[in-house]
Length: 403
Ligand SMILES: [Zn+2]
Image (cartoon, rainbow, N blue to C red; front, top):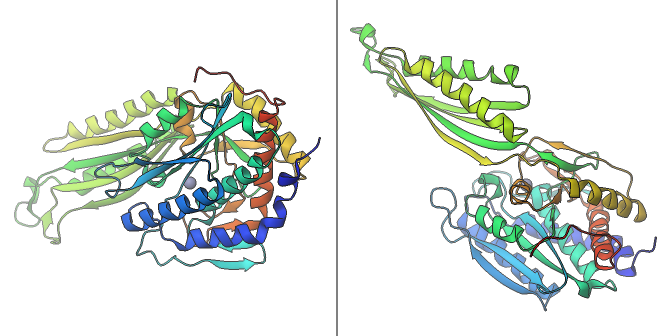
């Protein structure tokens, strides 16, 4: 099948797109770094405004006290909002690397592989969607398809300031495209686990460790017992993950029976139906501890992202995605389940079918070994652009929704 010239020639832009990725990765935009997020947002606005002068660009406040630094914003870039078809492309511009993280610099590992903060997760994906839309705009039927790009500042910390923005955007579109990185194999993502964070606060009773030890109730030991117990939950519920992420307790003095200990726990579920059995087991373990004399375990927190399940409309779209990949010469790949959450989870929850993991190939995310295969940016952009071209041409039918 024919590929419009603007899409066929994308690989000629590989060096330029790698340069753009280096520039964006050099701007620190850790989720907690307010000034850095503002700088990154401005850089994105400038680049999109230059490339798409006819688009309307809107700043959307993404305040979430206690989670996001004040003043951070999401960016909505819309083109042809009244065209007959409407699609959403999204990505986050925050990273897990804060302003004081030692990992700030990009480094080429070889001629095609860039190591740097957020190069795969997911500034490489932002470059990919940007290049895809540039090529799509020059394809012959683009006037028939409207699009919105949503760029957000808080995915890595749970999207507390943007979840409502995603829900509202989901209602405006027929289909969504999430440019999180592809797997090292090239596979994309068909479903994701739902995620939650709980805080377990154990209250005991302080006492002199030597004079009246029997008066004390050691909160650290009690909490440790609770954590060992809940670590066994996945043995009973195999599609559930429980990770005790951190723990603190006691005072500076070792001659005191500690009265307080706190742990934070990351949980993940595969299906909505896993939610209640997991909660029941957490609560039962907490209740058993609290039944002990002088001890109490308080469990706070909850789920922030629902599981992303594969929707029927996505099965059909994925076959077209694979066809587009074949037509631009990308090696065959499939789609797989991902344990990490993404903002695609919110789109699915809001009823918007979406494909996820559409960015370039990368790996070692959230570590200073993170890398992006820069030579996969243009081919992944070609797939997206060709898919959109075929939607605009009427060759691919997206689900009809009441927009
Ligand atoms: Zn990400």
